[in-house]
Length: 404
Image (cartoon, rainbow, N blue to C red; front, side, top):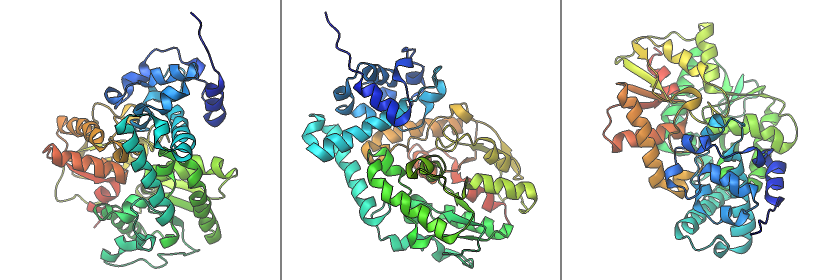
């Protein structure tokens, strides 16, 4: 028996993301930590093995690469510090660019779930390219969330003298159920006396949904536009309430544009932590207290290493006792809403999010707090569906309850 080994795929992966697939020795720790592995034909370790042998066709014609939530739990468990998630991102680019967009859906094989899911992801990409946001609505509505503010802050759009640009993100800006997040953040900022501005309708999608949909090339125009708009303002800092936006701006943008951004990028939890530490926020006990727990967003925790700032903020709110769920910090369970899985396989999202909500119920949490609009949407939906009596909210909303 002869074994045919092609190194072309391993070379591509190493060139594109620096991962050496040959370091994987099939211990399966990545697979044991994967929240969606029961729905995969090929487990993460098996994907590594297929890549070692150059079996690209097996990878790009199977739905397994699209059932990854991009949570990076695989990397956290790997003794070699390999990321199956990064391998999967490259395979998605190949499947979308070199197969589906170049040759049509038949080049993906005859798996109808795969064909349907990739079509949906392509439609997501088309909406973003046409309207600069994931909803497909007119991008001029980016500031619709400000309509219900008691008082709109001065310099809301394009203020070059602001302390920072608040990059709102598609979910909070375009989906009414998430408006409470930017509204609460705005209230807290005003209470702290912070001067901020936004890009208004000139804020375009950060590109993360395109990255996870195998369309990073199509995201380049969005990325350059966003960076140029901030540079034109000359504001020294960008702050986001969305971890995926933060991950793109902070970790991906400099590499993708090939140069330093020229300004600082932070997540809102870092800013809130600064305000609390400096005494700029006077916190009072909310009407309802109890146990509060924190859900680590994957893009903020595992991918960005920001674990303690949000916990420090939660511990400062009177009337609440902070407790951890069974899986927390770098080992936190994903909410299920990452990696464009909501577009590819929404039923699978519900299964993962139900597990996370159950962990919050297990410790008697009255409030399940995260620092991500998508996590809040996903977990709130799971709490309703599974009749779990826990209030799911963003950390900006939780903090706003304690601001007089």
